Length: 333
Image 1 (cartoon, rainbow, N blue to C red):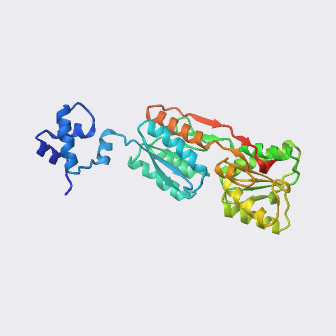
Image 2: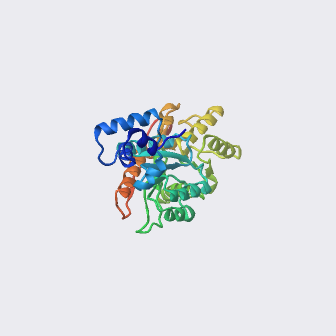
Image 3: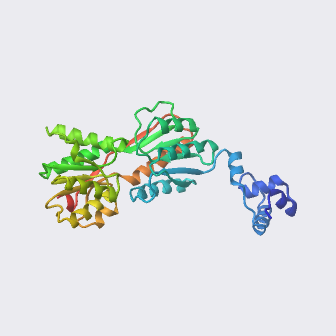
């Protein structure tokens, strides 16, 4: 049998309003009365209706955090940053994975209208008109972890991002400075925002040095270990060669290291390798990886902070841009 506030009121002899104040921690309640009420509630295994409480209060103290891939180590530090800030301010993070599906992104955004959480932090490889329209219609504050050029001054979302274009420029400049003249890039689908931003940095750097762009040397590794392995394998089988390789992330770089080990390609002697994210993979691999630090922890930390600002009343948009840094290790020397 499930017991409610009325049952506790009947047993204790106090009014339902007194019981509600004692259980909810809101408003004044005599200490002795509260002790008795809580004791009875415990004995009855009373569970509060959090949805009803949230409806009365107008807030839930829950934040939805959406990421594309829960198994990707890239997001671990970001999750840490979000949770630390939210917990310090009495909020809870609810994690949801979209698997890079636009439909899943839109579906979860639309649930915000049901007010089961107070706001959302969202990671997406491609903020487009479809998911942005759903965000604008959801009625909750949202923080994006990539930029959106079509933002309006009265939008309900802010964004924080690390400059992917600059990150790719840093990687390209490093290989050029190391003497590489035959570079290749393993990135993702060019339809995705992140990929386009990084390729922009690659193109700008080539143009800066008066070098030609060869589209056949830009491969789609799908940001995965297996995808990078398959893409580079096909490139080599088709007669491709490279003395420098930029890979989309440390996880994908593991696939490249595996391929090189199997085929006798020495890194960095035969080919220099640079990846992105500067995760634990970068320092655990052999050789260790030169990697572009994309500041995942700071993204999560600042995303949570500016979302809380919205929840506390800020209405004007606020956006933060972070600069990546290149951490040199064995693979890029």
